[in-house]
Image 1: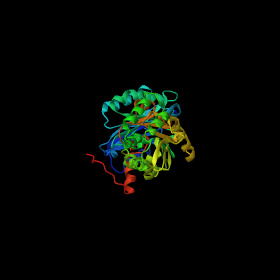
Image 2 (image 1 turned 45 degrees about the horizontal axis):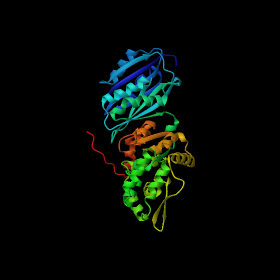
Image 3 (image 1 turned 90 degrees about the vertical axis):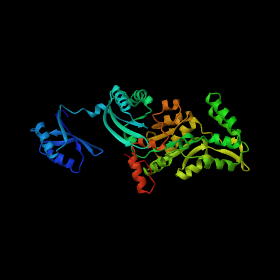
Image 4 (image 1 turned 30 degrees about the vertical axis):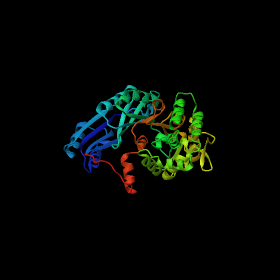
Length: 406
């Protein structure tokens, strides 16, 4: 649009009827509304209207008229030369998670966005408990930084503030039915299953030594897994079942799964651990898509063998792709959540790869990070707000517990 446009902004104490009064007042001076934005924070309203004016439009007359019908409001009327061409810019959603958000941290986020040519067009709070979550809608000149450039710039500026960042394109892949694939050990649950089995078998030190050897690169994952499982030979299957029922879910896991299912999303569990430890949780949470290793038993005890094929790093990515195909979800609408190096291929294959309380190499490679111990914080990266979660819980009679807000 090459003709001038008018930006009208108003701010004051919110009350019913403000928007109706403003638009009625503008009817004789404005040809059409081009854009409207409104937000209320603690009963304070800010309303912005972008308008195409009629030829006789006078800024001072319109401002005075608005101030008469809205005493106590601040009003600004600005005439702009033209609107920017939206086709020349790309839109991204930058999600921010913080246990505590300080003003200097917010300033560094804004500076980092500006440094790559990004313009913050909207900020929306998605959660105030148990973390603060904000969603920035950012436009960047087409062909400039892109998602990778935005994320790189932001990571350098916010890491020392303890802030998690996710950058996603504001396109159709953020909408529609998703497939969310979770790692299990130290992600869905708070323990490493092999370590608990080793304790039950009395071989914790030996298993720990093999794990350390694998971490040093002396054994690949399959070799390490077979060697560790061999030490479990003779462990009763009942002990395996007891271990399975002793493992606690991560905080927020039930809320995450319950909310995703309400949204119609598919959920899958993909683990380098063992089906025998995962199935009780999968059954409780109503998850039917599970891929993990299976322990071989004979006459009620483990043989020390694991069935083929082993679910390793590559196997996790394969499982994600196969599950996505089976439920008819394109890879662009898949989300993978994990914490370890054997999750890297799965995180890379997904449309959105999230490192959950992960090791540094995983945090560096993932699209997004979550460093708080609440698995349901993932919801805020998907554009789901805390208020929406709690409203749905209340309608279904699920207990909602949170401290009072002063």
